[in-house]
Amino acid sequence: MIGTTAGLWLAVVVSGLYHGLNPGMGWPLAVSAALMEGRRGALYRALAALAVGHFLSMLGILLPFALMTLLIDWQREIRLAAGLIVIGLGCWLLFNRRHPRFLARIPPSRLALWSFLAALAHGAGLMLVPIYLGLCGPQDLDPGHRAAADFMAQNVGLALLVAVLHTAAMLAAGGTTAFAVYRWLGLKFLSKSWFDLDIVWALSLIAVGSVGLATAM
Image (cartoon, rainbow, N blue to C red):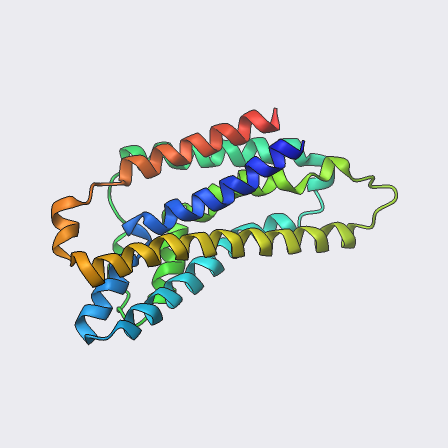
């Protein structure tokens, strides 16, 4: 059980690092803002806005599950359903390669809003759901002796911790990449050296959903 829990927390961090490295989560926008303004501070402000939007998106997905007292009695079924949903989204993204057009209509000055919607549209928050449900461990609770309010309070705190840890990892990876591109490599590096992560993203959703199904069963 300890090994499984450690593995799930590691998955929270690794998924955050992966989201941070993925240009679809916005770090090229931070580089662009810094280059246009010609100041390093613009890079940090943009990264902070992206992190806030990403964090709120993660929390918006996780909190409804944290508030579900049904987790006490239907934990296995909910974990199975969550795994299937994540796998389904991964399959859909694997064959539908179009990026949401509404993201292009959001002005660069609203990076937090863009980050929030981008994380929702790409299923970044859903990727955390099977991992989070595995950490909840409601099967260890005795419903006859634990109030539902206590259960929900514990899960809300856990959801906050997962979102914070994941976003911190995302910011570390994305911030490091953005700074390296801004300081040394330049935007031409992206057009010449970066590869398309759309297929990798879709396959990672399928993989996480499959792991969620396996651990639930």
